[in-house]
Image 1: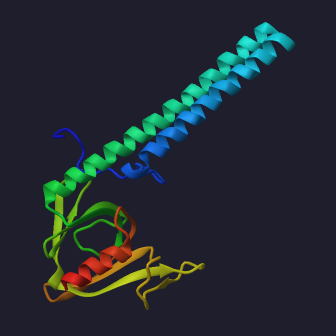
Image 2: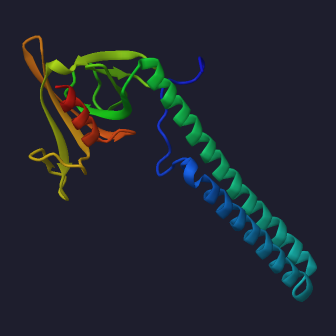
Length: 205
């Protein structure tokens, strides 16, 4: 994978079925394809004999193309998901991370740009920040962290950090470096949720 990117996020709402249900997933797909083909043939015969043969063939070609293109698109999406998962596994192996995922840095971290998409990896007792091309940007030793909060936004987008919440949408980290405190906020955390990062960091602290 030398020519592959270091990290790639999965498509939203996509997942590779676990092996335990993969057989049922395949069986359901076979049934769906069979019913689609059967329905296509029934409508074709109906149009051919009761309406107009030319119209029937036209409808058959258009419908076949639409169904075929739909299956092609689905296959491409599944291949993209598998590629993303393989890249993520390779990134975890290369970094030796116990936990790895992506996030958007909102603001506050001195080595990161505002609204910068990054990869976060927990390596030993350090939090490593990478660009999507694999460039290491900075390392934050866990012992430098002063406080840690999960952030929940209410309906009016007001942030709350009073409680540790499994539905948190962001993670706030305050750390001390060169006798100065910095408070960084991370949102849109994928692969690993804010609550999971919170518990992993707290466990090391």
